[in-house]
Image (cartoon, rainbow, N blue to C red; front, side, top):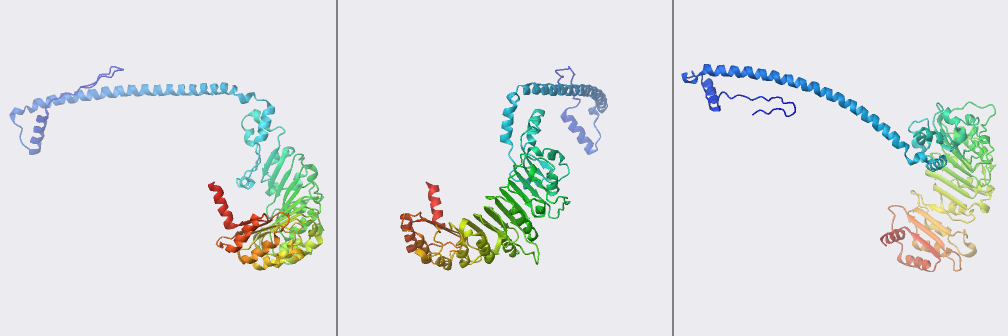
Length: 505
């Protein structure tokens, strides 16, 4: 049964059944058997009816093709109309968003409040190295805010300070013209040009890093050093690569921190020239590398009133660079001295004692922190004796144990014969526990006073794989000293147990 279209009244096709299923099967069997049809079959009449039905089906196919063509044309017309409707919808939606956006409360905030919000949001990058790796010419924390809208761009371009990272000199004119707004700047590669900086005003600049390429060469200035500090009166922190040290002037009294990186043998003379211009109470940090200089020039000690000196050795293939640096120093007001190395170095004992003597460390040096240096217990006791309030932190080497019976015996004594009589804190990290427990007890007992003096603090932390328990009798006596308030005692195993108890409670 055919079904007419309910929307356009298109009449459906109704097939005509000329033969029954049994008759069709009989005809196929005769054809397959190659038999003569019987006279009763009326084959001529059947052929006439089938031919008439074929003509009717052909006419119906033409009628359906005509209807499909008509529907296709109508469909494309509808699709075109839908496209026009979609365009109109997008236009109306855009206008709606514009009108609705004008009602947003943030658009009614006064400039003063937006300024305050932007100041709270403009934090410097935590990892400038990650910024340099993106090959951006320049980045500032307010850049993203300035791209939101024209009003925010105008506010960001006002008087808010900038934290700038520049890698290349090309394309940096825009940020250089904004140098009067710089609060901090990290300039690396060809952008680290002190002579160029001296031509710009930087009244807000507090921190400046000039990091040159290893083989960067600057055109010498007729007047020698680049006097950029006079145009940056608030600058208190300066970081300079070794190749640029000869461009820095010596009047550095405004600085609180001077950091010199990539300092080799040849750059040490420039470091000594600069530290004489630092003011009292300032800090000098050095990151040193070694080069193959067979006969570096002889240094004459230069006095400096710095308060803190921190030295990091980044190349430990040459031991002589530390002693060479010490030979050029005289630090009459130094209170904190720190040495760090990426690998074990031999301790320059004789150069240090000479430095301690001409600097009078016994009168002002409070803290000495060094790691990892190969040093004997006798040398350790000798140089720690120069500390005024000796509180050494001993990091036992991984190759040779430092906390041994020899060291503990050297530090053990009573009354006037006691070495380092002001020693009140003793901390040993990465110890291999290569000592006799009774010798450790004698050392601690000699430091625990019976009067009302503060308790003696002793901490020992073992290196992985060297854990062991103390002798029970020694442990009991240590606990008794703790109970009397004469000792603050931390042993690695006991510390771990206390942490577990604290965590469970």
